[in-house]
Structures are given as structure tokens and as C-alpha cells.
Amino acid sequence: MEMRMMIFKSYEELSEAGATIIVDLLNQKPKAVFGLATGGTPVGIYEQLSKMYSEHKVSFKEATSFNLDEYVGIPQQHPESYYSYMQQHLFQHIDLPAEQAFIPNSNAEQLKEECERYDLLIQQNGQVDLQILGIGHNGHIGFNEPAQGLLSGTHIVELSDDTRRANARFFDTMDQVPKFAITMGVGTILKARQILLIVKGADKADIIERALTGPITTELPASLLQTHPHLTVLITEDAVTPATKERTRV
Ligand code: PGA
Image 1 (spheres, rainbow, N blue to C red):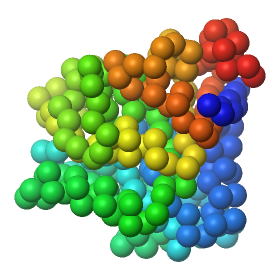
Image 2: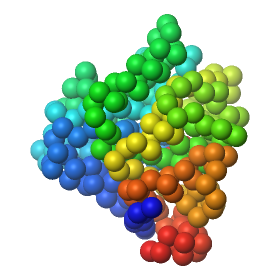
Image 3: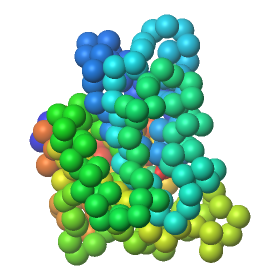
Image 4: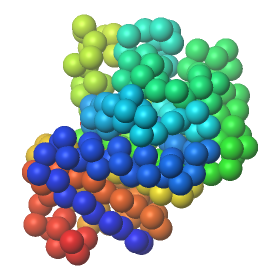
């Protein structure tokens, strides 16, 4: 694999660097296709992108985006849907046309067909140029949870207790946290030309070490990223253990 790791003292610096990679790509290739992620970690990158757009440093007019995942069981307009998250953190601040910003429709009548439609749409747009990814504390990417086997394409998943507990902070009660989601599969994710894995905080140090330096296993979905030919890891220094640093030859 060709892996590049960039270590930052602060989350602000990480976010600026992530946004700069995206803006540079867009300026070279205005029709770039992005894979976008939700969760806490990308918020700073989205803030920076919104700022750079407002300063006329970039335009998203010709770009296309595909989000990784969406909860099943809540309406699109629910404040915690990933549709709402993307509006709030990025889409309402930039000029990406709504018809070029795709998120799996978890309110479709036929969810299986929606999964197939989503993969087809990605294919029809060529290839994702750059996929942003976070890593869950259990090693998930998108909502691909640790399992004995993983599906390649976009599919419906049952969320693990770990993931539901981690996301409970956004809901009033645990019962309100969705139990299912639609997610791009690991095959869909790994087809991206470049993957930008963003990791912040000491609480991710152990899982990222195992993902990048341990055996490749579907029980730790992020370990499959070791097979990707163009992986860039942006990470805060508190998430870097000596083993991570050593094995990735910084
Ligand atoms: P986080 O989520 O950025 O909120 O830590 C990462 C993930 O679960 O993929």
C-alpha cells in the first residue's frame, strides 16, 4: 500500500489540511466526485471548506458528492439525520447543486432497490476521486460494523450496541437511536481513487494502531484500508502511538 500519514498538533490544523487537500483537488478537477462522511471528526473540515468558499477560493458548482451512510427509521428532516447534518455543516454554506449531492434515501419504499440504485449512481459518475472517512471506536468505516464477513456493495446494516451508544449523545434517549442504517459497503469505499482517513483524539489511539498495523480482518473493518493503493491519514498527535508511528514509517 502507499500510505501517507500527516500528524497534527491540533484539530484545527488537521481540519485546515483536510480542507486544503479537497480544495486543491477541486481546483485541478472542478468535476471531482467526493465521498463524504458525517460524525464529529469531519465537522472542522466542513467549516474550513465553507469559509474557503465564502472567501472565493473554491467552487463546488461542478462537483458531485455521495455520502457514506444514513440512518433508517427517521425522516429525512429529523435533526439527527445525515441529510440534516450535511445541510447544517456544509451544503447550505457552499454552491454544490442539490441535484449533485447524493445521500442514501433511507425512506425509500424498497430499501434493497435503493441500495442497488445508489451503487449504480456512483458507477455512472465514474469513480469517487476522494473519499473522506472517519473511524469508529470499534473500527467501523461508514456503518460497516465488525463482523465475520462484510458485504461489498451498499446495503442495510443493523447497528452494533457500541455504535448506538456512541451516537446516543445526539438523541434524547437510547431508544430513539436508530437500530438500522444504509451504508456503502467496503467494496464501494475501497473503489475510491484516494481515501482521506481523519482521526482525532487519544480515545482513537488504540483502534487506529490496530487498524493500520494489525492483521487485516473484517472484525476490524478499517484494517481493510491497508489494502488501498492511495490512503492518506490525517491524525492528531494524541491519537498516534509509538507503534503506529513506527509501522507507518513517518
Ligand atoms: P466520529 O465518528 O467522527 O464522531 O468519531 C467516526 C465514525 O464513527 O465513523
